[in-house]
Image (cartoon, rainbow, N blue to C red; front, side, top):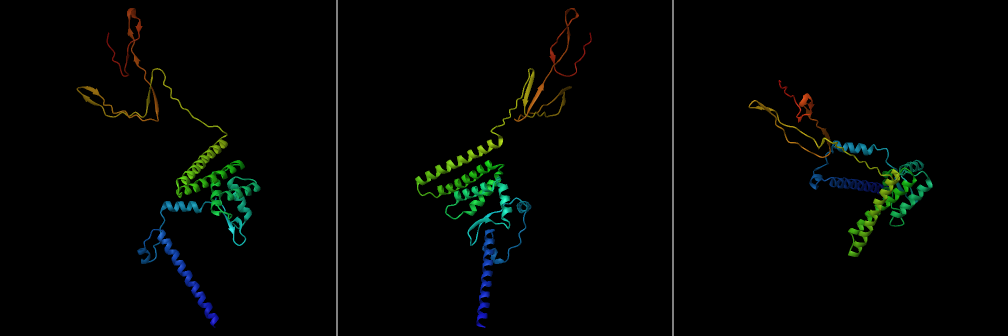
Length: 287
């Protein structure tokens, strides 16, 4: 009887501890959400209604079929493996995402990036999964691009790691050293981006040059031309008001203006070219 009582007491204590732990987690979550202590003491939090853009983002994230399996260290045996029920399927998915077609090469790249990013003998699983996600984001198309993408991921992570070391430097010598390392790493990253661009484009850079030709006798007006105002009569004559001309860069309009010419009689009845006049109806003179 005493043993059963002790067992029941131990079970009650465990349940009580679990309840307290669950309440503590809930309180921490509410504090992280921005609620005050007074709001928490007042009672349970009201159910949150997501906004339309939040629902759209959540649906896009949760419905993404391309989320990659992640590595983890299997407990008790301390072995690196995919957190997936079928290791061969997870391997195929990740290899396709990082653009590697050979399993031996893939395993070598995983070992190299793990050694490069781990600070101790224990693999840094977080950095490893981050690097794989970065490589997949580059979308390598062949083994060469995959190797370059893994290098880019390592350089990026190390540059930010040394940036942190630069912030926490205690002396000017340490600060200067870390600053030089960060500068070299970031320059290397931009060089890697350029190498990837050249590899994908075949080393060719496309430059488009556009020309606007203005022929003799024509006028070029750059921008949009707007005429404003309405005509009105003054003293029997027709006057027109013209608004301002607004000129903006980005458009070119070619306008060819040709003048009407009235032939004029010359000596001996021969016709000669007259002076140009503006467009419009010309009055006919009686002889």
